[in-house]
Image (cartoon, rainbow, N blue to C red):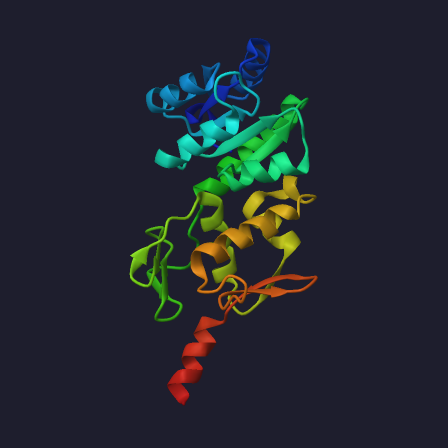
Length: 243
């Protein structure tokens, strides 16, 4: 990944030894590193340091990581990776539901940490590929991937970077089934091949934001046991025009 020396990582953890360990390894890989040792410091540091990504510990003495994450999401979409010693499913899902982009369980290797950081940074950059201009799905939903704008019933919808990237790959393959494995690789990266719950969780996020009735989706359709298919809006338009 190019220009790593320009990527700024804020490390938030109340254990100074852990912060030093992470800093040493990230600086070795070319990152700039900022430090915060509690939730209040972290929130102030985000405004001063303007990080490209935050590593945020869950267990902290003043404000826990989940509360810090909620505060961050009130004013920033900066990618966040949660650091947790628990590794329990409930904690991982809770972090993702609060707006985290990933989690990593302590103890972790420097190689794993750097790999996860690069994967999150890659997907939040979100290339627009060959889809240009305003795409009209139907009268209700319009998308402009170049401008990173989603219009629903005439109003802008705010998507997190991972939600946006997932929608892009679904719309790019409209009418075709995209498997769970393909979405994991395209949206999250090869490192996430054994994390299928990411796809299910973020499909649910998109449906909650875009569908009239998320329980009976019209745009993002489930192909059981295989993956997901975005409605073939081009074919639907052609059918209407020939009626």
